[in-house]
Picture 1 (cartoon, protein in one colour):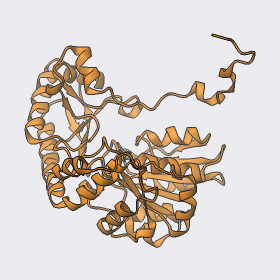
Picture 2 (cartoon, helix red, strand yellow; picture 1 turned 180 degrees about the vertical axis):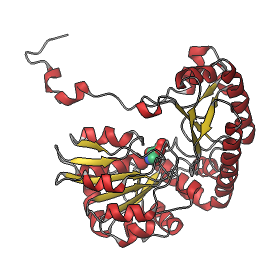
Picture 3 (spheres, rainbow, N blue to C red; picture 1 turned 90 degrees about the horizontal axis):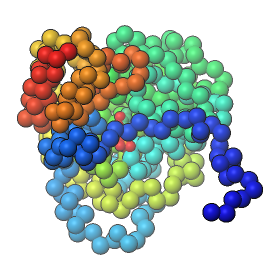
Length: 368
Ligand SMILES: Cc1ncc(COP(=O)(O)O)c(C=O)c1O
């Protein structure tokens, strides 16, 4: 290969060398190949997907589509109209994208300049820090309290004139708790952009949407990945202040949301009764799973308003439990965050899957 005089590596942004990639879990195929397991027997409880899958109407609608060779509508108008009706928000204020991730990314890029900061409440969803880093912004972490609630006074005290964005996942991933709307109101009163990430809204039923509709600085984000079972197709949305929509369109990737995702959103919304029944079942299963976890002598589950349960271990360490479950073909989530060193997160599965994880945990518990 011909060597140019200047090493192109020197043009890479220096900060990138030092960054860690976003920690996405290993795929089932890779894990099964590594352990010599049959991939179809692997129980995936590590990414909070809907274990009932998507609506069959999604598969039918995708099979019927003859428009895959045409670029999608950059404004996703049809899909947004459906979302607006479903969410109870004005059409003009709904933006759709390639997962909630895309909305997080565009919003951060709109508000964060190098040296700015974003207030975040760890332990929480890791992608906020990834995107803030890409904007050369600082993540100002205000640790959650012992019960995982936000210390609003501490949050307000840590704001300075470079604080542009406050991001709160509610329910929070991985702790499962909701931030009360009165706390969100106080954070909104600071005048910064408040992003309330309601990725798990359907499992909680509590929303800051009225706050977003009433204020000029509050955005609510949601996704179809969890309740609607289309994580693989990537569809999320946000309800934005009216003034921000026009600016948002300037930085949004023009064709972020694929035609397949748009079709899947419309079909999911048309079949929402079925999907919301699976959500109800998962909510019941969540409570049953928590009850069964309480029965283990080494586990202390937290309450959850989402489709996963965070479990503090009272014996053993998270890595031993993860490996023990992995050997039995079950994937769960562990964390590098120091406060979660002895915690695991289990997504709520179908009833028989939850029985399987409890049985496996009993076996693993005996080895701890
Ligand atoms: C709190 C939170 N926000 C956003 C997302 C990403 O959602 P999407 O799949 O729509 O990009 C997740 C996914 O795990 C999440 O937990």
